Length: 213
Image (cartoon, helix red, strand yellow):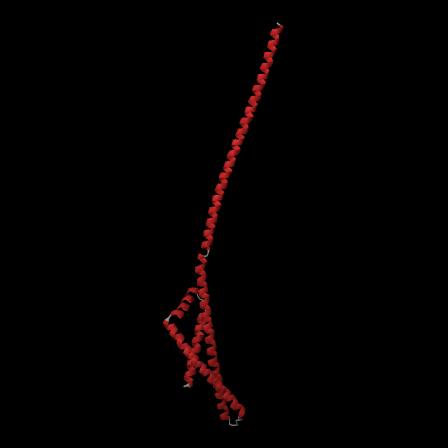
């Protein structure tokens, strides 16, 4: 009966090793995500996990029993000195089986804890990657809206600046035109003043010549 129990423990250990290798194998993320999701949501997987937890309770009892047997055998070995080779060999066999059972149950429970932690960590990592992939495309939306708003404001300011620049250029052209008109008017006024002065001189000279005659 005990051999059957420890055979089941060994089979569970082999299953844990295979599952651990499967979890740590390099594979595409979508495959690993599908495997983690299936193991977390599948009814069959949940029943298997429930059964494994019950089995861990029995394995813990077997571990305690193996440790107690090992301590008992070591205590008897130190207390009694066996001369009979058959009895000594029998005790050594019992000690070997007790040590084997202790190591087998202990390693099975330890690997089970590692397997549970690994499954949880991989699930959290995949969930974090999924959240990052879903949040990343949405994150730039407020920034892009702000950029669009700022771009619109900049375009409006640029258009207003261009209008003001055109207005200033138009005023400069008007001022240049007025300056040219004023210069031409001044030149024309000076030319007419000079002509008027010459006419006055000529008129005065003609008047004096008539008086002399």
